[in-house]
Length: 285
Image 1 (cartoon, rainbow, N blue to C red):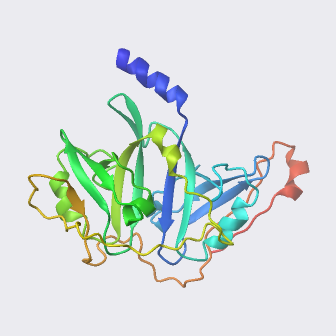
Image 2 (cartoon, one colour):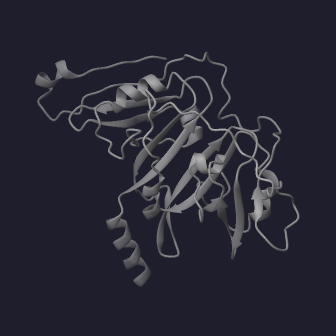
Image 3 (cartoon, rainbow, N blue to C red):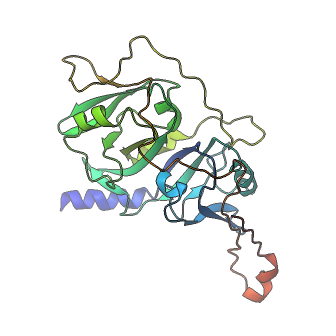
């Protein structure tokens, strides 16, 4: 009963989690976005089955935030995002309502499930450790792929595409099977209260959704992870090679300038006869 009371109190206090996406692959993303003309928020209204958006973990009702602000009600967010998706890579953050799906309590703390898709070869830039039966991120190297994609120290690692269900006794599996693959899918449980620190500083680009991946600086002390556990020190998740495409979520044969699937609608509470002229719609395939 006490644990349930803690859970109920925490759920009432926390209503949103923050998620980062970096999409590098060319082609249609496969989602619909809506500009709520009354609130000026930009929401994901639909995610197409088997699309790139599904693979990256974008969800319906995600609120796309303005790149230079943690506010979602900037009227320019929609237009900037619409223009940015014609280019790659793009980086954006969403604010996601906390629901029973995609969240769980670990040690009486509410955690949200995050997915990161790393397509670039080279150093991943994180170290892993074990706490009991759980595998966690022990450290993240600044400006590494892990850091850029938004992986945090103390994130609890789980097997990808299991909805976060497989988290125990997977240390060897994670180190021996995932770090060489590209695209690399990393899924973690993270306390919801720490997600607010993910927003990057403002970017001065003409379109701040458009993102340039910085060069990776290889550190001499980094070594590739192997199946042998080190007696002392953490396991480094680094590599300079790739075994090719073992996951299809970033694979695309569509032209570079393909437009996204988008939709602009009006959420006005006015009478339909009065608001019909204000409704704007755009569709492109």
